[in-house]
Every structure is written in C-alpha cells, then in structure tokens.
Image (cartoon, rainbow, N blue to C red):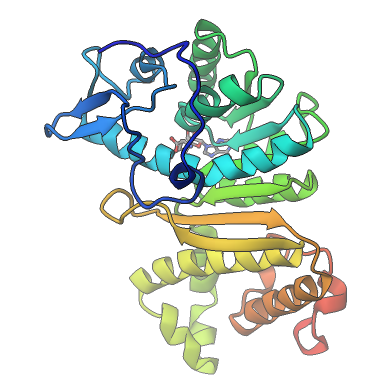
Length: 324
Ligand SMILES: C[S@@+](CC[C@H](N)C(=O)[O-])C[C@H]1O[C@@H](n2cnc3c(N)ncnc32)[C@H](O)[C@@H]1O
C-alpha cells in the first residue's frame, strides 16, 4: 500500500461536504483492510504514514476493530466540521480551532491532514489535554509530519479558559468525548471566546445526576415528574439526557443555533449525541431559551446548577417564582 502524502488535493465531492451517514467512500481511494476483511477507503489526499503513526492502521496498513470504529467516528465528524471550516476560511485565512480533551488527537491530526495542510496553512489547531504524555506524543508527531500549525497544551479545559498561550480569536471549538464536565468547561470556554461554531460529542456526565439524587426524596413527594429519575439507573440516564438538554438551551440562550443529531450508529459508541452550535443573532429566541432553561431547572429542583448553565440574560429572564 503506498503512501499518498504529497498527492494533489482533489476538491471534495458534494456528498462529503454534507453530513453523510456513512464512512465516505471516495472513488479511487486506496483501501485499508479491516481485520474482519472489510475494506475501508482512505481519502486520496490522506497520509497513510500518519494513520500508521496514530496506530489507526497497523504497519501493514490494516485496520483493527477499535481503529475502524475511531476512523469511522472521525471521518463522520469531519463531514460536519469541514463546511464550518470552509465558511470560516472565507472570512479569514488564519482560522483557529481548539480541540478540548484531545486525547491522542486523532481528530486534530485528521482535520489537519485532510483540510488545514491543503487549504489553511495559516490556520491553527490547538489540542488541550490534561495527560502530559499524550501532549508530548502529539507534539512529537506534529513535528515529525511537519504540521507546523498544530499546538498542544497540557492544561485542563477550565485552565485553558485563562491561558495566555491561546490566540485572542478562536473560531471553532470541538470536544469529542471530553470526560464528564469537561464538555461544560469547553462550552464555557467557547462562550467566553465567542466562537463561531462548536462541535460537541459529550461523554458521560454525573454531576447533574448527583444533584437529582440528592434532592430525590423531596422531589418524589412533591413532583410527579420525579418518577423520571426515581430508580438509580433512570437517575443516571435521565441526568445524562437532561444535561445535554440544558446545554442546548444554554447555547441558544447565548445566541447560538443548535442542531442535535447522532454521530454514528449506536453499535459504535454509547456516547453518540452530536451537538453543533453556530452563532446567529436571534435575541428574541435567546431570551426565550434563557427563560425556558431557568424554568426547567426550577421545576426539576436544579436551581443549584444555575452557575453551570449560566446565561447572559439570567437575572432578567428568571421568573420571579423561580428566583428564590
Ligand atoms: C475519552 S478521551 C477522548 C479523546 C479524544 N477526544 C478522542 O475522542 O479520541 C477523553 C480525554 O479527555 C481528557 N480530559 C478529561 N478531562 C479533561 C479536562 N478537564 N481537561 C482536559 N482534558 C481532559 C482525558 O485525559 C482524555 O484524554
């Protein structure tokens, strides 16, 4: 299997510019073979050596079950992110994307290889990750492949919000399975930087379930809706679902247009919800969402979570009955 580094970039087909439900299959692309024998297309402009260095492909150019799942997720996510990159690039050449909870930075490297390297050499991808060994390894890989626009910071997402190493203007924030409340910190970071777009695939979130659990006995007596979280497994699942609902309302309250969809089929990941938020000035809608957010938290006994799901219009929008 030959390396395609340096091949001339072909314009991506319309199907790849839209959100597509399957792994993109690009005509003459070389195929990597999964352990199952199934063939997977690699994009013509994609570096096989990079996929090997990321351990997505084996040295022989094959895919195992895990890497097949990861590649499918990242390709699929690329289909959603690419149009956002193109729109932003039309506004300025020095686009910046910050990837929170980057891990081994599969997403960052594939975005750089498939898009930045070809179309946005003045652009930058910053990976934020708490595990230093992953940060070191990613920095080493970026150097090895000459990806000069990639940078990795050994910081928590919350610390990144105050970090001086980041540029003033950040265009896109991504967070793929950033653990627990790291997604909320990524949202707070993105709101602070007034980014144009956020692409979030939340991981498990236990914080809200703990608050529901703490207030359960009181809620069960006074609120028939508490049946939704009376049993422990429901507390966990409802807490997780509700967290994403509150996140979406919070984003809308800050003036973002929000789309929620599925990342890949459930057989690939249990944490499969994809939230895409893009800035759009609709003040009336923002006010309505802010009020609705306060109302939902008030009715479910979650007023303690207001600092987490803060909104710019919080004071004005809190109905008097809910503000105590
Ligand atoms: C499940 S992994 C996902 C990695 C990567 N985004 C991906 O999808 O391949 C979550 C990563 O987030 C990192 N992480 C967890 N909490 C974090 C925080 N508060 N700040 C920065 N990184 C965090 C973990 O160390 C881990 O590498």
